[in-house]
Length: 129
Image (cartoon, rainbow, N blue to C red):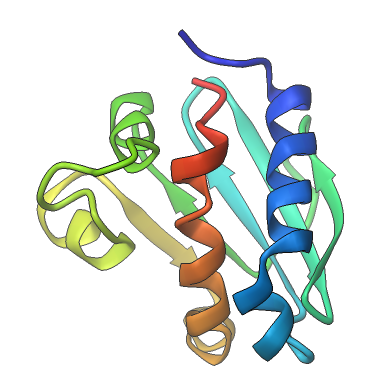
């Protein structure tokens, strides 16, 4: 059972903004990224380690720095408290599953530590698919 995207976005923002690890090291964590989950899409805008906005109904021309695109099943596996092998991180899933990482890889790499911590919050927030 999935949660609606607006409820998910609120919970994901709260988890991100209150995460001690992100707040301790994310002073310059500023970027935007798209989670493309098939039927559900969200652009998360980060500014200095805080969620500035989550666009839960992005249009084709809404900007972002990089995107993670995968099937709903892959996102559900990411969101398990203990993911199956090859769903434990973005690179494992991009090598062995259907995850595509697109966009500006430099910005992703500049923010990778903070992004990975934030990405793993999906295990607490669930996913809207």
